Length: 229
Image (tube, rainbow, N blue to C red; front, side):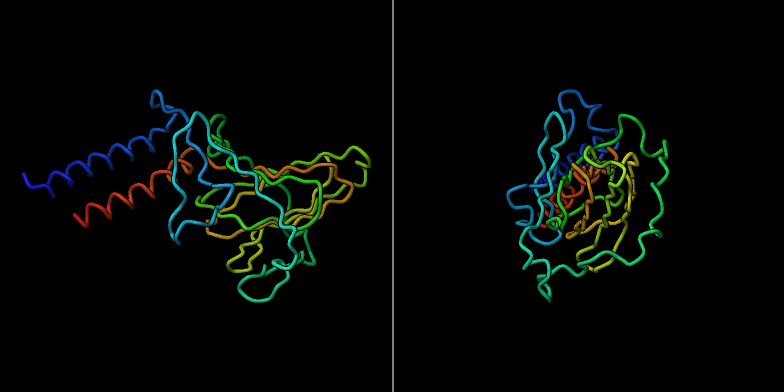
């Protein structure tokens, strides 16, 4: 048997195993458990375009804390280096209330938290990437000093197109969950917190979406290797 044939056969087996693991859920494979996050906190944008950071298997997914952007020169600068939207829309009411909690999708035990953005404080987050086609933002806040006048206003912006994807203007005691069906290299939050002691943006997806984002880069690399053999 030729060397190329051996490599092709071995690669095909590996791809089948990877796809089987993703479709069954990593928790079902003894000794593997969950998967670590795809984000690299020190430098999340070192990978070439179209390539996600390397994945590793760990006992539970890594949760990445999205930093605030305190360098306003990068926020308000014009051109490619700046943020395309630097303020809230005039009317926040069209975003509506929290999205429905579909139990068929967001099943207990099937939700994976992969990132957080926390406050207090107003302003902008750093740009962050999302490899999932389907995810949600779960927002809660704590207001101790003046709960009756507390208000949290926020939007999620696609940094590549300048489109405001979703947002909300919520009061204390009103947790909000917003589903997003967009992936890409650059997203960011704009947040305004009035009389809010702390807020937490929990970014969540399903195990199926998380596993698919893990598997696809490995499949692409194997496919490229086999095609070159």
